[in-house]
Length: 303
Length: 240
Ligand SMILES: Nc1ncnc2c1ncn2[C@@H]1O[C@H](COP(=O)(O)OP(=O)(O)OP(=O)(O)O)[C@@H](O)[C@H]1O
Ligand SMILES: [Mg+2]
Image (cartoon, rainbow over all chains, first blue to last red; front, side):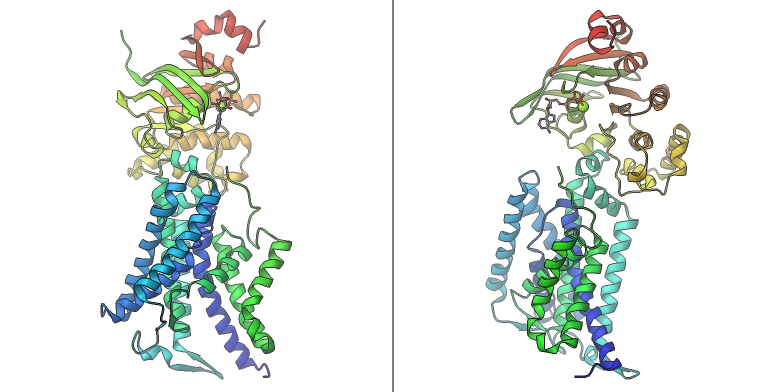
């Protein structure tokens, strides 16, 4: 296939799209890591749960699609808050390896729970059953044809990221989050209920993951209990590439990874089957030459 | 005439695992006064302040603030009651601006008008901070960080201000400034519990002093008396 300008633009749009979705998930990994130095392996499963919430919101509770999506995003946020309360909070002063093992356990638990409750058979998240057919329409822009869905996903991703930046940099709770990420004890000395703020951090990261899951399913309409695994892993890699602990890093890493993946497949179609391996190769390169990630500060052990 | 006590510590024991760091001490801070806690490295001074602030748990004993039992209350509740700590090593938030650091100090306050007034008051004490408002805390010099740490604690409008070695690592001129500020803060009605290695300056500025030694109170008395105590002179004032 020759790379013409329209095809390139098409791939560019896809790259931004996939990158934005990775970014949405990566932010949650990075926020939690920034505060607790914990890799929340259950994050990808919150992504999956959020998608199921939306699915059943529409099919079982018969909510309008947009309302079901909003409720599902809030549900994912609450789930994240509860995961912290139940699984991680009791281990705040325990060795870090305990939390890490708990995170893996929590991930397995959520996946198994999904199999039991929702069943192992994949569900289709396709229009018009879940959301209006309107989104599948193609828009002709010059010589490029783009699905309306693409704009929708990009728009929502951008809105969520702007909201997040506003929250972290312009609100009091956001300021407390940034303070906690460098010094938990001193933040508590300022009168901040640290556990509550950590819970809110989980909630926000998880809500973004839930939103990511729904948008993901709109694009790749296969909902199953293990759907969070690969996107979760990729987003984690994106967070590491960008500099885990940094929100900007997570965004940069997400967009970079999404773009590279799409472009590599576009330019080297012979290697399309190895697509998932690219991410790991990039990860290995980053870990070899700049282990703290592109925007990451030097990783310090927290006392 | 019995003085009104703002802080009263009775038989306080603190452990780190099985290290017995504070071994049953009694301390009283009368309202409106400056009380100092001096002692060698590892005596348990920081541990005592951290326990009052709610960062470290007391094993036994009682901490009364304004007559109420606040022992082992979480740190964020202690601040709300009116106790602020300027921690050892300043502990500025390096990634937050100077302004944000100050606002962290006022985190739970709802009285925005008064917060603004207190901000002005803090700028009067430390004019240099005003010029650095949008700078990141981590870029300040050591002295400026200490000023910020004190100001940040003041922003919670504490009734009792605890300071852990505020003069440590500062140039002599700044040390003087810090002690001057301690006097000013106190003269405006804030009670102070001061931990210092600089025993001479601490005893000069304070009304009453305790000498801590390996977790026990070795000596106590009005600061003017401690200044003339032979033992204190030999061990802490560097006079022989
Ligand atoms: N986090 C901790 N874990 C274990 N032991 C500790 C801890 N913090 C302090 N200690 C021990 O408790 C004792 C009292 O320490 P503390 O920091 O209170 O002393 P200090 O009087 O403030 O000393 P300095 O003048 O050096 O600041 C010391 O023996 C110290 O080693
Ligand atoms: Mg100390």
